[in-house]
Length: 194
Image (cartoon, rainbow, N blue to C red; front, side, top):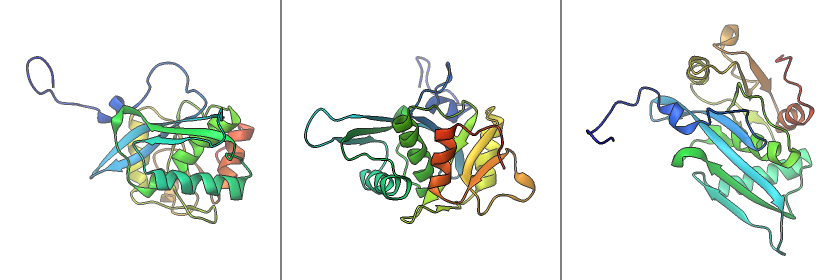
């Protein structure tokens, strides 16, 4: 909406992405599906020492129950401790994300903040997490990858199972377990996507 009325939004993903500068630690771009349309959204996480006896858990734009589950999986399966830390998670742009495919993006943002290591600027993330730490395939993976490629992203971090035949629109660092994804983030192993 502008001063002369409604205008077409040619690229809705641009509304939800940080276009300037390098990606900060604690940020992960999620390749999602909103209705029938692919959209890229930035998840922002901050993990900080708690100043009080009971750590805070604050989330905007995502389900607080899923945040609690992702934190539990990161602690139990990956050895990252959040018990004495405040955790803040935000979906940029005010969008509300409800699909389970955002689990891996939220986990990547949280791990990135906890380890103080930024994800690559040209990487998108998607995948559903199970309680065992398995990264499960999600629907319309090729659509997500095509949208990311169209917006200039060069690679993706996603589920190993269900990858498109022939590799898809982007090279995907396929991970079977959340520990593999956290290891990639912590070790900054991004040159090889196989």
